[in-house]
Image (tube, rainbow, N blue to C red; front, top):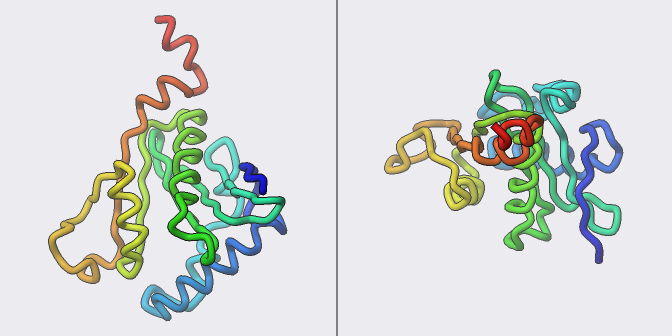
Length: 174
């Protein structure tokens, strides 16, 4: 059993399990609450998840996608995480946390100092993951999440950017 990260595109055939599973997940959890079923997965073109502004990551086990995620530019200093997913049969094993850590490092390598993301109100396990991994909730966690609809989070990764950013050596030397 060998796990490895692969930076690719949502159009890569190895990404199909991620795209299909997320479409199913969003459809079964939300129906048409946020629009036509499947619309969320079509909302952003693949180019947004490509360097220099974004990236798309798969965690492969013996060549098959078991987890993944992506980011795109949100603003000049902020990357927006999207498509964080773990295969349904492999959840609660720390794979999403591995994906988050790798995406954070890659966003820092690409010069971002902040991460932003939203998750849906019917995904308490995702909200718990982000809260437990140092993301700050940008909503009132004391009220029913359905009131908010989407749950925004942020995380400062400026320390990673200083360490791993594109000009890290020059910044450390000065």
